[in-house]
Image 1 (cartoon, rainbow, N blue to C red):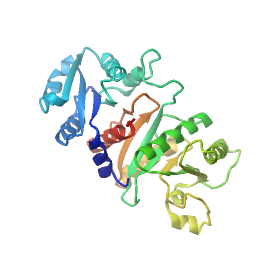
Image 2: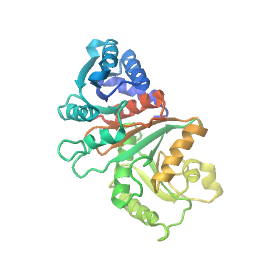
Image 3: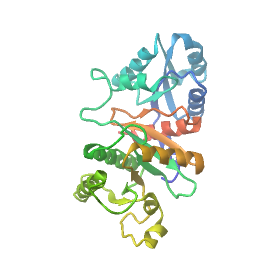
Image 4: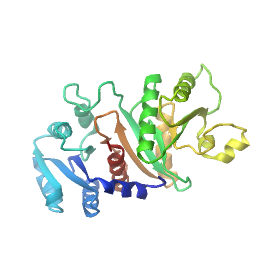
Length: 299
């Protein structure tokens, strides 16, 4: 899969149901209108009573494919969205105009939340970069500040699974650092050794895992040759695993601001994918994030 257009075409095969919480903003309207027009998804809209008019306007676009649920508060809206997933009515949970902390409190609630037993919440981002020949997955730009070995392991599992679901049979996973050397001064590079050992034992299924290496060596075969780096990644990475949230987040923002990249992102570790995009993300980015959630949520 080389671009988001192919991703969107893939989700036409099965029409998913989206629980969209508080869709009373222009981006939510854009997403609902476009997905209904393109016959991609159905929507379960959870709206505060004070914003009922927004919900009615969206339902009028396609009454057969939009259900409306009215609630009295943002907290109730978040709980209702989670419960719709539990009841099997929704395949994806998506944030509209609601505070992320309110939504995540419901998602992570120990009594009724969506975090799977033993699951680790992590952020999977995907970039369509004009100068790169395929989609590039990476983690974690939003949730895990300083991954430990267990969290790195979860990040690899989620990203590799997403690649497999998107048709990448043997994803190449690069473990990112500023150099190719492992050193106790940088504990994450020692975790990388353990991750590579697990990959060699088949823990992650069909995948190639190597590092540490820098982003340029991971994604540019000429740089590998120039630096005499012999790696099975061969400058053709499908996945980048970053050592901390700062480096991954800067990478995310730099791609969008300076490289003209299109982005998508979802949260994994939950019973269904959760779309929690940034306030600065465009309507198109949120549309692509929804498409990604629908695709990787396939059973």
